[in-house]
Picture: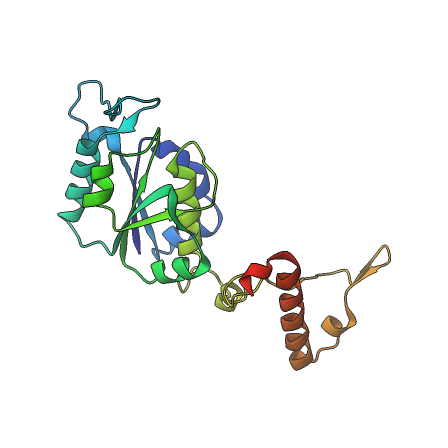
Amino acid sequence: MRIDILTIFPEMFQGPFSHSIIKRATEKKLAEIHLHDIRDYSTNKHKRIDDYPFGGGAGMVMMIEPIAKCIDALKSKRKYDEIIFLTPDGEKLTQNISNRLSTYKNIIMLCGHYKGVDERVREQYITMEISIGDYVISGGELAAAVLSDSIIRIIPGVIGDETSALSDSFQDGLLSPPVYTRPSSYKGLKVPDILLSGNDKKIDEWRHEQAIKRTKNRRPGLL
């Protein structure tokens, strides 16, 4: 999979993309991430990529020209399955969306800033809009990092034990059940006996029951 991220702050991705699962995925060449500085496509001598909104109002708006030039340059080299704009008013990210995107070959992600991007970008170039939650953050970079991680981690071969990703929360519409590890007893706090029984069938049944119980208590809307 190849992910191209359009941003005005490419340095923000150095931390999340240089460690853990994403780093392993890129080292294994199971995923490629390419960062593109939108300012490089500005024809303004000061590399300006924003301007005042027509009609007045507070804030600035990202201009169409540098964004369009960057997307056009990428599209001239390969076909993209989706061109995604990270925005608070997009479709809320779910595990099902991440599962579907993980099967694609090429994706573009556009990180917005200020009051947003010129609406013509959304009308002419964007094929999908995604929000990571009903709140506003300073820019789309953190959202793009979250989306990238949620996609890449479920690409076959990225995680050593692929069954681990299949048992994550939301994969079956439920939250994950409680998990425990050694020691089996700590200051009087004990691991449920069923998990020490060695009876795989009973353990699976217990986990499913606990997942339903936890989902009912914490996220009943999922049911």
